[in-house]
Image (cartoon, rainbow, N blue to C red; front, side, top):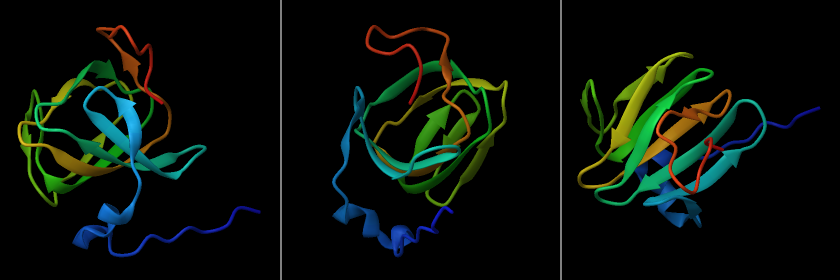
Length: 120
C-alpha cells in the first residue's frame, strides 16, 4: 500500500531548502513524487524557455514565485493552471519562477530540442 507524503510550508518558500537537480536547459527539478501522476517543483532561471509541446494527460501548475508565460498570457504568483490532454503551448519566464507541477503522463515536444524527445 502506498504511503501519504506531506510537504509543509511550500507557499512560504519552504522549497528553498530542497536540493534541485538539472532537468532541462534553464530548469531545475525537485521531485515530490514519482509514478502516475508525478509531482515536482520546477525552478526556472530568468529567460528559460520550454519548447512547444502537447499535453498527453492532465497537467496542473501552481505558481509559487515569479511568473510564467505562454501564448495565452502571463501567470503571476498564486495562479493555478490546468492544461488538459491535447492542449499545446510554449512556456517561458522573463524573471524566473518556481512552480508546483503535477502531470499524468509526459508531454510530447512538437519542436524537438536536441537533448530531449519527451518530458520526464
